[in-house]
Length: 215
Image 1 (cartoon, rainbow, N blue to C red):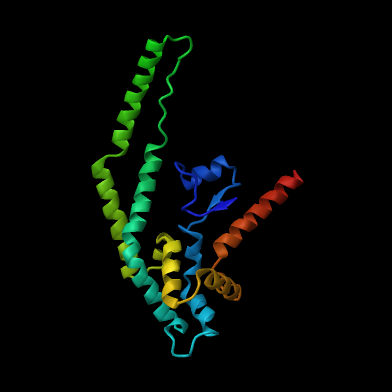
Image 2: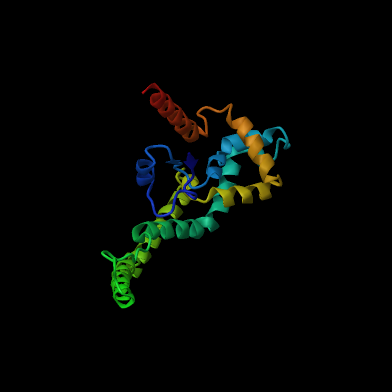
């Protein structure tokens, strides 16, 4: 099975997901599947057959700059998603199940549960330290803002691609499903393949199934 960063199981990191699933569940290194549709070269070729020669949609440089402009207002949204996931992973699920709770009276069970509640409260409060959250927000925002300002390709992996691609399609005046279909057709002719991450992961699944069958 394959999922993007947005649909990865809550409360687990990427390595833990792969370990628990014994490699059967993998997480893509980009936030949304749509992040793979942000290659300006492929987008330019996608529009080359339908736009006049002087259209900005045929110019990879102008397309990339447009994507960056659309991405800037999404920085805070991306940071909020990143930090909320970071602290959700840190805190984990609440567990107030007491130990040795067999044959207890209602009063004894209540006291045992409340003792567990106290421990969980303390753990959650420590995990949601306001100072650490503030620091995490500043670091994540500075990093992503820097990627976009310096035009570092890493912004394409971290910005929520679903929202960005939707806004780009609207600006380009094309239906999003049609844009995706045309993009995939043109991406297949590109080297290197813009979907290489996904292709490699499916290849690893195939190799795993052959290895299992030969045992």
